[in-house]
Length: 450
Ligand code: PLP
Image (cartoon, rainbow, N blue to C red; front, side, top):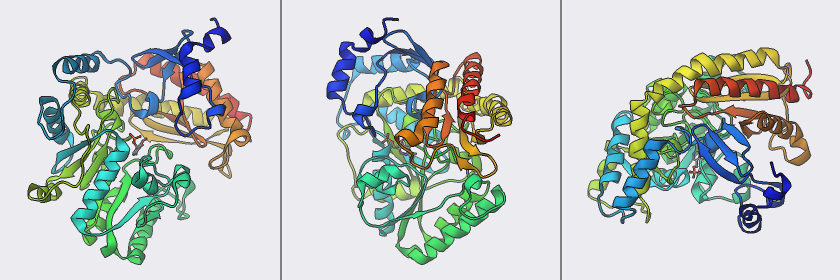
């Protein structure tokens, strides 16, 4: 390793001088210059390799440089790189058909965007137009993207710098049994009380003023919060009773991450709109969209659809989506995600909870798991305070550094490590990475009472 000399490569210097990185104080970060990636691994300019337990931003569900996706993009580039969205083309049409095939119920029409936030913006606009109402309900502890509307609907601190947002957004508490807002004693009670709270919120807001309830079917970036059985059905029933559009944000949880095509399928609930991005094509070329129920889409037979983007249905991105959905199917990866969750990740995390005083709770499904870290398992005091920065976040920063030293790139958020590897990760790699996390947790244990 050449160490500090190589660290000042041209790429590093240009980055430091000219690139503004997301959500960061630029002087406090030191980005790795990634030189390459293959499968579940990526490496820097010095050849240091990490096992990607974060699937980058929980999007590379097939790992890096999957040959089927690379070839599909190459072939599409040779045929037709781009075309205006008012034309039809084979890649976009096939991608839309394949997405409709795997979507639940009558969700058969797709409006393509460049990513998740734009998908949320368009879903909200459709819901408002469909209902003629303006109000939107979304959860605390949620993330929906960083454009004006999507960040206003977000229920985590990333919203604060974008306030005041547009009017009409009301936030409610979703189920989170480990830190119950409802003094519930178990998952079932948490689900019931969270539903009662939502019902009351609707009553006091006036359900006839509410266009949509927007929720992540399984909350992702804010903690991998799996709703208790019956909760999503209860939300569906409330929406039906009051003519409210149910928008399932599946940007992170969808496309196999939860061991289903869409996370909401696990409970057999059919929303009116689904927002997707990330796993639809693993982000090899940016792509997102809204899947619209036929009932709602019918309105756009005679009147114009209220949205548009220069790159809607971009052929390169859609060709990657066609290949990606093809790989999920041909390699049985939806089922595989369910299996590695139930047979490998879940049991390994449960064992870590037994061994480590700092592990308060482990939860998840499929390839979508969280380890929630605490200072004291009796009081559940979090390892770091909510929205901790700098010194207050030191225990988490040390834990993340220990994971990286152990060769694993984790996804850290708040007082949690999220275990979100590619769905096709090699089993030996998965076990190796879990062992490295297990070892790194001894760093967090130093801050916890036994
Ligand atoms: N919705 C959810 C649930 C997400 O997790 C994200 C991103 O992490 C978004 C929306 C925003 O997607 P994008 O960053 O592609 O705009």
